[in-house]
Image (cartoon, rainbow, N blue to C red; front, side):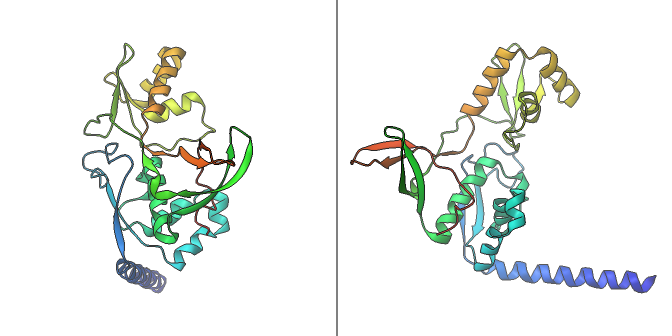
Length: 251
C-alpha cells in the first residue's frame, strides 16, 4: 500500500514541477495591462480586479489550439479557456464579469491578429447583407456611473423596499425572469437570506416593479458599446451591432 502512495506522491511532484515550469515559461512572454469595461467598480474592495486593470499576455500558437478544440466549442467554454490561459493576474476566470470578459477578448484579438475584424452586417435601410470590416480599437466602453459598496454591490431604491444587486453573475437566455432576479439580487432590506429573497420575488415583488428593476439593471450594466457605424452601398452610413462569434479569432 505504501508503494502505491509513493507512486501517487511522485506523480503529484512531477505534475507540480511541470506546472511550475510552464508558468515560468509563460512569464517570459510579453504582456500588457488592460483596462476593464467595469473599471473594477463591480468587484469587492479586496478583489484583485477592483483596480479596474488586469495583466494579460500575448497569445502563442499553442493558445490557438484552444480555439480549435471541438469539445470546448461544443460546451461553449472556448473563450473562457483561452482567457484562463493568457491572463497573467492570479484570478479565477469564473470570477470575471461577462462584460469584462468581452473587453479582454477584444484586447486579445487585437494583440494576436490586429484590429481589423471582417463581419457581415445587414443594412437596415436596404436589407442588404454586406461584407465590412470593424476597427476593434474604436469599440468603446459604456459609461458606468453607479456607486458600489465595499462588497461591489449596488442599491436600488425605486420601490418601498431596499434592494441590493450584483453584476458578478452569469446570466443566460434560458433563465426565467424569477431565476434571473434570484441570481442578481443579493439583499432585500436587511436580509441576505436566499429564502427571504425568493419569498420577496415570489410573493411581494409586483411585476411592474420587477420590470422597472430589470430595465434599470440592463441599462446600467457595464460593458462594450457594439453600435458601429458602417458604410452603406452608395456611400451613406448606417449603425449596426456585431457579435463576437466563435470565428472571432480567425483571420
